[in-house]
Amino acid sequence: KAGVTQTPRYLIKTRGQQVTLSCSPISGHRSVSWYQQTPGQGLQFLFEYFSETQRNKGNFPGRFSGRQFSNSRSEMNVSTLELGDSALYLCASSLEGYSTDTQYFGPGTRLTVL
Amino acid sequence: TQLLEQSPQFLSIQEGENLTVYCNSSSVFSSLQWYRQEPGEGPVLLVTVVTGGEVKKLKRLTFQFGDARKDSSLHITAAQPGDTGLYLCAGAHYGGSQGNLIFGKGTKLSVKP
Image (cartoon, rainbow over all chains, first blue to last red; front, side):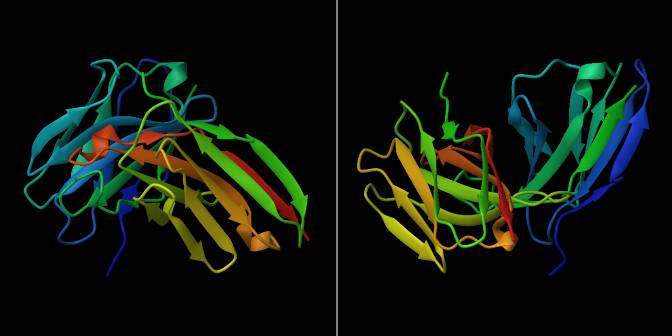
């Protein structure tokens, strides 16, 4: 079974630009969660999608958005990039998205904002 | 705000030494997960503990959930360079979704040969 894949793996952008990251979950998984990981704040939850609907949202500004397609693939978008958005963005998939479900993480997209 | 405090933040030891990593909270969790993240990769789930006082062993790794389900520890016996990585704990509440997982900031372990 293929794991969670994320594209691109690395991205360099400048302030003010926007970026779209992609995540393909494990086949059969309907829940996709996105996290931001930084050395200072650790792993912080962005949002979770289930059956094309955003089911949970973390404490991030509206510049961060996402969506999920009918095949469970998900994208997240960050508009008007700021220097502080530099981070590793991880997506994770699970069967139904319960906290007791095993989450499988992708390798992440390393975003650098200059 | 629920927090999971992990200690120590950094740990650098020699191959063959033992170590313990702690994960503490003032909140009660229905289960606690431990992950290991290697450089350039996403976290990988090692174990989930669900019962207060529970002890689980995974080869040289021993995980314990506190009796009150507020804290947990990870003990590694005879550490090897392959154990190097970031160890994360995450607390979950029964019936919650992935969005309700609370992650600690992690313990960065370096095992030197």
